[in-house]
Length: 352
Image 1 (spheres, rainbow, N blue to C red):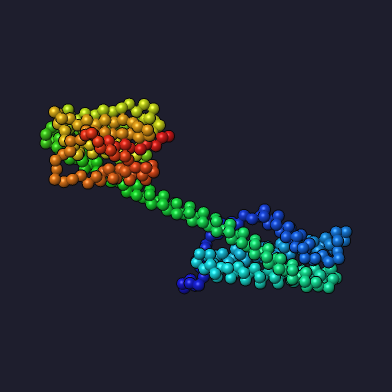
Image 2: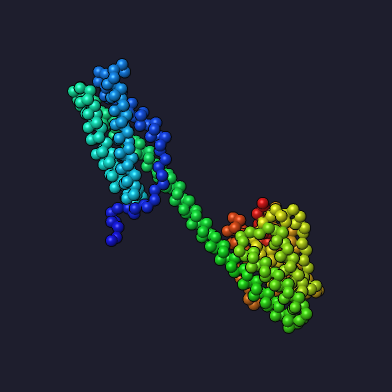
């Protein structure tokens, strides 16, 4: 059977209502204040025993009205929602407030007059009942306001958790593309070396195994210490040196204390060096210079530009992937600058 469309979706779980302190304070306050304001005690004063019995009874009336309305409030929350049926919610609250509070107050106050042996003062009874309804309406408003604030906070936390899950899924997807991309380029290099220099191909193959082992481990992590990435980059550059020899010049600044204090996305430096080699012409007479240094919270990779003459333009996919990975992991992307024949990429780092 489908749920009744006229009733909001039931909420299977309601957070506990932590109002013990406010009830312990406010129930006696209302129980004392309303009788004094309405002439409930009649001729009795503090020196008479019935006065104290009447006071205790007034506090008990306050307790019954508060607890009863609280119970009804929590019950209706399971079926009616402010955002789905706001007018119906108001009607239900008003009905519970008036048609529970009024009879309860009138009957119990009337019972006090009967016990005290006084004729019922209907003006005082009506005034007390009206005061009870007004107080219940106010307290209900406070309860619902606090409830809506907490509900909004819960909704915001849920949205934040969903957003984090979405960003993590995107990041995992981007990281998953790194290893196949590197392996494809490395196998192309190995194929070239096998045809042109079998001895260097064997050395390349041995080094490639170590490099790829790091890739398989690092791609599962969101950030890695700069020291680990630096060691991996050194191994990767040894692979490049086996293929390109004197046509490639690499200059590494000393990371110093940054090696242990900075964290970067895994395989990011390798990708930038690989892009420099891939998209620029280089030879023994005109080597490609790649310089790696440091800025303020950034690792900078720069290379001189001698674009390869190709009918197929670069798609820029590698840089776009890296920029998106940095934005998802660090909240800021890479900075790219090309000027005076040099291509600069600044990679953001996380400081421990």
